[in-house]
Image (cartoon, rainbow, N blue to C red):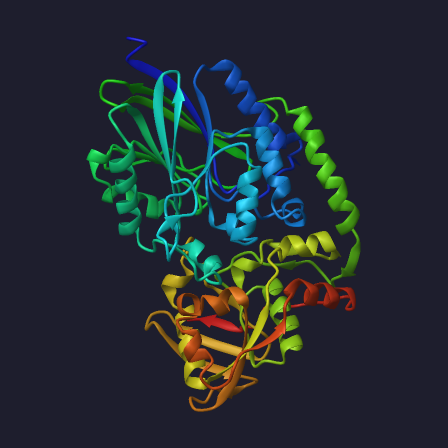
Length: 492
């Protein structure tokens, strides 16, 4: 094989790491799984063993751990600087602390962060570098970042920023970058996306082969693969979620045709049989952990028993408890708690502040709104529809408070009945509802109702500017809390 014409590369990739810094011991064999220090140990090992190694991350480095939340992502970027990825693309959670804060995080990063389709509307200017070209052993590799429309939800509050909504626009944006900045010297073109595996396949099908995209390395849907998909001659891969595994491509690139001529891929479990932990990084992470533990490892209450939240598509014990707490605070007829905002699958019986913040990491404002019974029925019809409850699509599923019962007929795709405290909801009566800021600002997409419609009868009212303050105070002053499944949301 002509070494000048053909070059071997190893591409290691992660996505949706969500502040998963710490390793866990699992099983009787004492096997240690995941965590940044083991991941770093493996990346360092591969960098020593192979000549041309690239490590890339496809979004959502942030959010998911107390260390990340306490330092608003600053700790995560410092830890990522230790891992030294070659390029990272934006995920929706990179925007959780607000866009101005993202710019601070970007300045802290010792690695390029790419995104091609976030814009300042008025000036049609991109907010981030759309692409980066890395020269590795004489070969030029282009990386382009594309984000999901999910990002729009967290950006709704900043009307000056927009992103392309449809895949067609995202595909056109890839074409624009390739047409404007790519030349025959680019040997490999890789999209780092954060739009979900199914969307990646659709995007690949839309790309003009002339643009020369070779690979899509994605995130967002937390997909575990046996092998990459191949659509329109484009390889599509993803590496699950967290740091318990890492994707590895070993590829051979032909300089004459600018294409991949050989490849193999595997999803490797990151454990102590794969590599030795990076001791320096372990010490560095421990310094953050000590600070966080000191502040958050205090007992705030004891529940009557462990409460669970196994699936976001259905009513859960923990979801019911949180909805009931917000209902007591807001005195609203119906409280909508986004199922996805509850990030743990269980809580208790012993609850520390750390535990509570882990299961409810997102702090937000709560709003009170007055709508008609007709609007309320329309809202339940929308959120309970079957397509909203499919795994991977269930981003707008909700938990509701005690006294509410909604019955949905899945065969007929219609809301059969809606009662509050046993009384049928009357179309022309007025009802109060409580939603958080995320849903308030994205009401049209999440609730199928514009803000204008929802505030037609009365102006909205802010109940609290901090959901987390409400939960912390409630848990601190109530012991032996319990919650059961009551058939609040029934699917026939």
